[in-house]
Image (cartoon, helix red, strand yellow):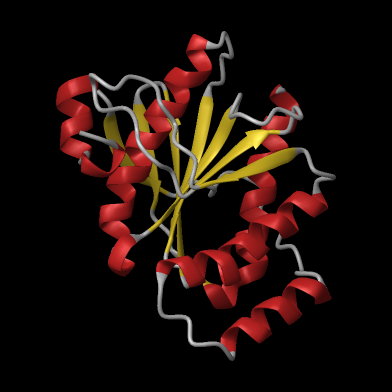
Length: 203
């Protein structure tokens, strides 16, 4: 068993992780962020390409957006793409992650995951939510073993067109009631900024 094999029901049965659908950012001051001309040009160029695979969506759409957030925040975090997050093989908390966002400490290996991002297979957001929820719990335990106590761990599931955010807090996976779309890029960037600002206040 690995992260991709979990369901929300499995997480409840095995680890008592509940889940709730909420307006995740409703009580926060979401400030849309205008994308840079560089990002706009990158995404416009990508639209002219035959993006048929998950790999292409990852390289041409998702990664440029994440790098934009990293630039805005003076490289506060680093991005691991396709790395494994090994927490407990016997319990199935292991496997490759599409993206792990970690605080940038200059380490070559993952040291402090603060955000996991799942690229939904076959454009299936629901399946991606299951996998992302498992990775959030894995990231929480990873940090806990390292003596890092973070109250919240955030996640995101995306098809590159659709973006759905999650958060783990006190054994509950909160799933945002709102799905954001690629034409709402300013809001997507704004949400990532809210998440980064939270970690800046804690780390």
